[in-house]
Structure formats: structure tokens, C-alpha cells
Length: 235
Image (cartoon, rainbow, N blue to C red):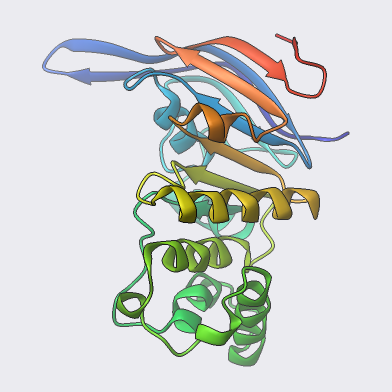
């Protein structure tokens, strides 16, 4: 397999009023193409900070981060934004859909920043993504006309429309009831089986167990890295 993400000696320190908080310490992690990884741990352990760094929404204090063969540590905000748009699909707990845009417009929105795509190409890509999540019949609806589960499926479609290198999901079922949570997790399972690389942060132990690799974080450090198939610790 090919390494998609490589973190070496990564640290993240927040400084406020002369107080240093070490959110992440000595993180060494490799995620291969096609893997389905869950990151779990108690609140405040650093898992969301780690996901923000993986998604280039935050930067490291020290250490290196290589994504898809490119060193992304130290890039400018403009360079980071371009890589985010091309290589990373985000799924958030709160859906983050724009209320006055239709379902199709929401999914196509990130593609507008790809200057080489025509409007027709953007809409075709968005429609194909919506069909993958069984929301192709709701293209002209607005987010407020959808259930929470349907909104999250649209958010997943938005994440995959641009064919990203990796999908980053931050508590994707956190705002859903058990039935809709199961539907969204089944959808992520399906995307993984179709070849998607997924990294998911979750509080839910049952959700974490859906991944093929389970990483536990505590006090800013990786304390275990278990492959579900072999049920053995690999790091």
C-alpha cells in the first residue's frame, strides 16, 4: 500500500496568557491509501486538534506532515486552501450546509474554486455524488426541508464530489438519532469498500469499531493503534 499521510514527531502547543497547553506531543502516524481509520479518546485528549491539522485547518508547532507525497508543513494559507479543496473532503458533526442554497448548489459549492471546471462539469460531479448517497431525488430541496440524517448524507456528498484523496469526518453521527446514525455509518462503510480513504473522529465506541484501524489518543499522545482485522496492536 502507498502512504497517503505521514506525520513525524508532530507537536501542537497552544499559548494563552503565558500558559502553554501541549495539545499534541510526539505524534508519529502513517495512513495508507484506502484505509478506514477511527480516532477516539476522551474529551480534550487532542483528537479534534489532530483532525484539524490533518485537514490543514490548523498548523503544527513542530514536526512534519506529508500529504499525498507533498510536504505541507509551513505552506502559506493560500497553498493550504488549494490543497484542502483538491485533496480533502470534510464531514462535520453540524452538517455546515448553507440554508439558502439548494442541495445541488451546496454539494457543488466547493467545486467552484476549481477554475478548470465548467458549471456543467460541477453540476454533473455534484449530481453523481448525490446519487452515491441516495439523495439524487432531493437536488432542488433546501437543507431546512430535510431531516438531520438527510442533511448529513448531503454533507457526505459534498465531501466526495471532488474525488478527494481522503475524507475527514468529525463526529459525523454526533447530531443524529440511532437510526440515522446507523445509515450514515453504513454509507461510510460503503464508500470505504469502494476505495475511499476515511479518517473519522468519534466518541462512539460502536462507531470506532466500524473502522479497520482504531487509534486511541490520550493526553495528546497516541496510546494504541489497533488493526481490527488482526485484532492486534501495531504501534
